[in-house]
Image (cartoon, rainbow over all chains, first blue to last red):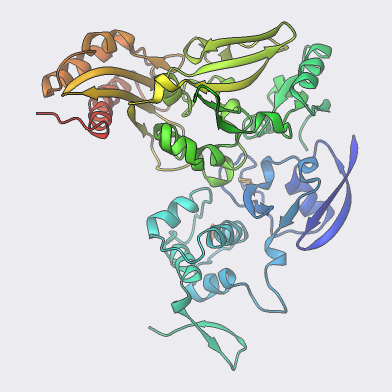
Length: 172
Length: 292
Ligand code: FES
Ligand code: FES
């Protein structure tokens, strides 16, 4: 029951033959090797499978692969550019917002969509919590994740570190 | 892989109706957040799918010539919640929708899917029942309309024939003009949870008199329900604490909650009476009323 779809994955054009019974999660992991996309629950409850479709976060476990035809998909694999982590990724590292890591790619993508949508706006920790309510983390207790998102949104938190060539948070 | 046996994509409502007629076993899939979970869990009733995910004519929110608010059932929750028209005219619906699932689910799940699924806990149902929403349904026999309240027949049973499809959800102008509302969902978590009890109140207040009240509950009976007896008792009465107490007392006879693993009947009744008072009070305040 195969169909050909055309889509963009992390900026690259792809033509894929997908089975209509496959979820996008299965195609991304099994056909394209994008294993940052995790299957936690396969029921839309944990957000570990979050990817961006046309910059909107969705659960790839509940998305038929055929629906991706003509769309643009982003996963964590495409977020760092020229060996430099994205702003959100770097904030997760700097804040220690990662423990076991299984939830992290999903969180990074949900956070990336949130940060892009709210760029330049003042948001409260509670609004960030609501924006990330579709992602579960069993390790961190969320606080470091919320801080990482807050820092990603706030230009003043950053300074440029010439030596390491990357972004670093301004020391408190 | 999902256990899908046949899959047909419909490009229009007409085509979807034709495909439904051709295969009596076929079911519609729109946002997929319910159907794909059921398929994943091995539930049998969704092996034959007709995909209405990409039907543009079902995805809209607008005001018609009579300034009635019309919502396309294929519109995803995020778009409904953020719609300036919805926020301006029926903000109680936005309030209810932002309690559903998480952002990822709301970006896919459709408002029509939530209603057609027919579960007693459907969070978009109570505000729409309170607003006297009317459904437009299209099928092989043509077009018909019915009040949303009559659409729910029982748990997961709605008044859709096999060849029919929901094509519009309408809140008429006289049902939102001058009305104010409030929604509250009692659940175990603040997000990603199914309502233990959901409550919507919509009211109109003039000169300290409760001109009209519509009170609706989810998970308080086999279907989302309106508390008509209570509404009739209090319509036209002066605002007072006593009035709220009448509502609390009367609402018990309007509902019929059951015991499930989520909550016992007694507990649900306790929440229902508490919410009746709290949600109606907030709706009255939103309508500019004061309670002495
Ligand atoms: S695996 Fe998709 S939401 Fe959990
Ligand atoms: S870091 Fe382990 S689940 Fe989030």
